[in-house]
Length: 205
Image (cartoon, rainbow, N blue to C red; front, side, top):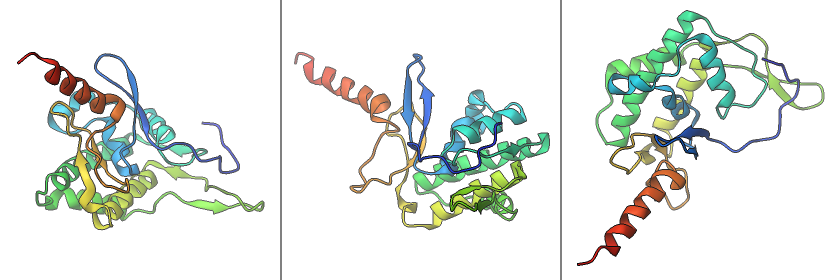
């Protein structure tokens, strides 16, 4: 990856996903830790796995809401831990979204990842910020896990939700002021719901 000395301008948060019919759409789960959940998951969600080699985790970090310029090195062992942390975080988030008790084993996986030193930024002489050298997969996972802890214990803990569509399991935190977000993305599941509702109203009695 090319190294950038200064912090770039802010970009819109979220990831570009592709629907089952091949249409791209923008999904903002509202938190770094929830962006990791789009890379696959436990059980039936393993079919969506995209973290097959260390370079895949590096590519995810590049697409995530982390600032650009992170020169990241990931080992095979760190990739395995990333999948384990993601799967535990996936189940914890689903439990939080549905008001279920958190599993102690999954909590411990996240806490263990958070215990390692996180990614580090540094101040440059021109007053800007950049990533410190030597970023590793372990530091990345610590940063993600700490973000999850902040989410689950912070003011938006009660707004962790699963998309309202019956066939979509994307998880997000609703950070909107009214707090009425139902869909992963209006341009995806939101529009599908509007079309179904319109068709239902248009059917002859």
